[in-house]
Image 1 (tube, rainbow, N blue to C red):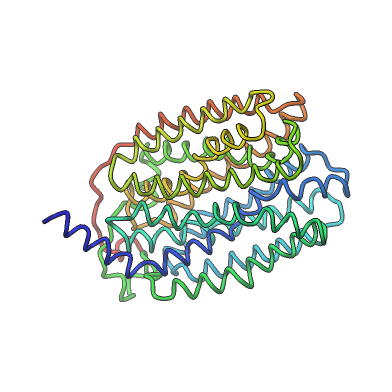
Image 2: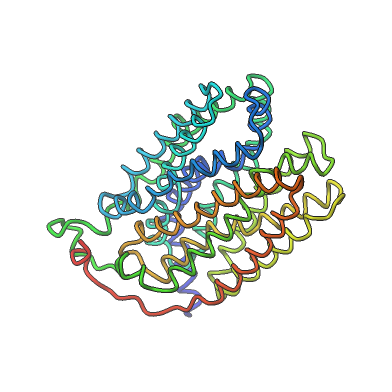
Length: 419
């Protein structure tokens, strides 16, 4: 009887919530992570035109991610104003940044500044805004809903490399950036806003006089959460995951060329990385709805660590390299599902946007470290072996951090008290 009731609840969730999942998938798929995953396609053209090295480009991208410091504040804005204004602001900033990339004239500071602007778009194209209405709409299938929604970036990473490569081949790397601007602002943003129009996008921390202030919500404040050791362990796991996976994906095409692949085969490694994200997000989202999310997360982290360790094989061949990149990329896919899932499960919805914004800031600090580290270590050593070893160790630590996350009952308060 209880199982049948759960099935009815789950079907009702999907009937009500599928447009929200679709809108989140589109919005997240067009976020700054798309450029991160496609950036190695642009690297050869910029190196040839401007004389930049891999290390210089990687360092500039890492420095530019300082723009992520705005994530907690835009997350707080989403808590107090609702998510729509944040989505519109951030996706507009992305379009401006891509247009700026297309007009660069060879000064490395221009690239740094534009990556900084790109990073400011993260909150409005991530689970900072989409995770809250998804968590409110879905309970029985929350993990699966988050997994499908956050797979948007994975899907675009699978589908767009061949198209981006074709645009770059025909119109140059500048044309590729123009195409990204069009996809983000003229296609993805309107579709996402239309799809989520019926979802619960109102503030969860409204002013005390607002009607919504009387609705009870669960969870501590952001300040209380920052005094909880689990918050810092969750942030550390996000840092380690992004250090490893962002460092790899931004060097994946040059890495493939170094391993003896053709340019076309090297580009297909990006598709393998994106496929790993899709599979991991959806499969793990379904698994954490049924079994211990801490154990599931730890197992996937260890599989990803093994993939990084085996990538140090000198001449693996194309087929094996695709498989290893797939395993290495699994944790990147899982993390974008697990981070919002654990944020809601451990800390509730009361200050979700601000809390998740701080976690995203830690994750992007790992992204910057990985991007700079992989590029600079290659320049210093002439290979990726040291970087791959560090990445494997970071993911092993991630598994231990996930296992340390213990759950506690959430306080239930009125939104007015949070204001």
